[in-house]
Image 1 (cartoon, rainbow, N blue to C red):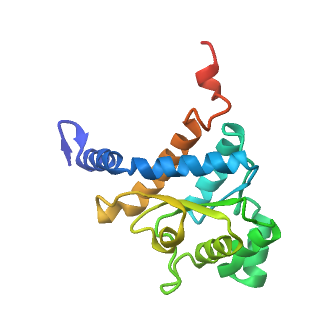
Image 2: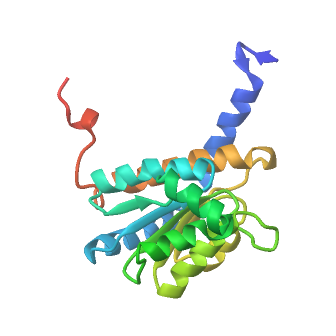
Length: 205
């Protein structure tokens, strides 16, 4: 159904996006910025992870944090050979935590989580995220995340996190994943973190 030539669904979806922007926690974003500045200042490494869309975000965000912000960064899911070998040989639950162990995650490093639910062992939701966060806390690494719903396990232990507000229970996943990209692009565009300009902003047309 259209109203004045505009899709009712599209209109509703965009109105929901406006509402989410208005409700995003600015102080939480600032806390994340400060932790990233501390991480870079201490030559710590940034490990990004998610599943599904969050895994795609992790791979994209690695580029931005490395290239634009000068932070040594890695995605836990970009090496498909290791990911599938660990899943096959050891099980899904420990794929990420074992990856972090092999990478010698330590107290000066940071784990950055992109997750809609934040993980929940009791309901067997994203158990590999929960195990990885548990391991990060065990070794003293900082944990951050951009999460949906109530943030799940990740939010309960994270040092800094942003929860994408739920404005429509039927659209939690698309809204969360959309705003995960917005938040990390905001972070790497902050003049305090950004060390290199994007090509199109620095090019003379």
